[in-house]
Amino acid sequence: MYKLIVANWKMNGTLNKIKQDLEFYLNNEDTNQQDVIYAIPSIYLAYVGMLIESNKAEFKLASQDVSIYRGCGAYTGEVSGAMLADCKVSYSIVGHSERRCLLNESDALLVAKLNAVIEAGITPIYCIGESSKLRQSQQYLQHLELQLQILRQIKPINHLIIAYEPIWAIGTNLIPTMEQIQEVTSFIRNYFSDIKLSILYGGSVNSNNIDEILQINEVDGVLVGGASLKSDEFALICNKANRK
Ligand code: PGA
Image 1 (cartoon, rainbow, N blue to C red):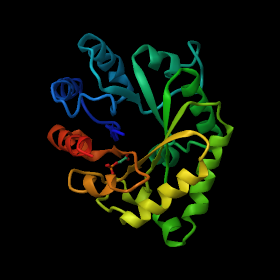
Image 2: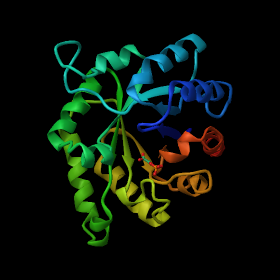
Image 3: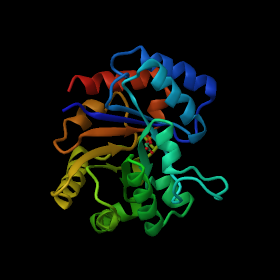
């Protein structure tokens, strides 16, 4: 199976950078693949959606958020799942720790967002992860289980993607040991033995550690933040993943 590589641009980029990078990715056989997914700021999604359509690109587009409100209506500032799908968005990140922590996104809100995404025909990339405090107190598996439990409340789904992103590894250059990643990804796999599941690892992934991470049995791909903003580095990550 080809590995899924998700570039999470977060709140970065300009129209000019997106044009340049995506044109480079379109013309590179490692980055123009259907398992390479670009999660870019919502303001630029329509542009990239048109780029995908006019170039018959293989790569896929993800949103970083979705409204809990459906279709169209009087919801100032919101972007619905239907609007995302209209812009060729195939995946949506839900539950990223930055949104859970900075915007206080609650479990109830995340269930509503997951359902909004699923109803729009978009595949959710649901993120879970523990803080360093929980890791040190040995309470991390209980915490992760609570984050997984909310998935029992969502609508039926064909394919679910779960990204394990320890908060202490995001943007820090601190990578868990391979045993630590193996432990949690196996825990996730056992928790959902009944559905089609892809498990990603995220947190300080780069071209130097990608080989080792992708060797872990349960890891089906990676979510890349900072390293996805440098096009050469991201292309190298995809190249190495492609060779697995
Ligand atoms: P990072 O971010 O690769 O910069 O650590 C990963 C993420 O937050 O998705």
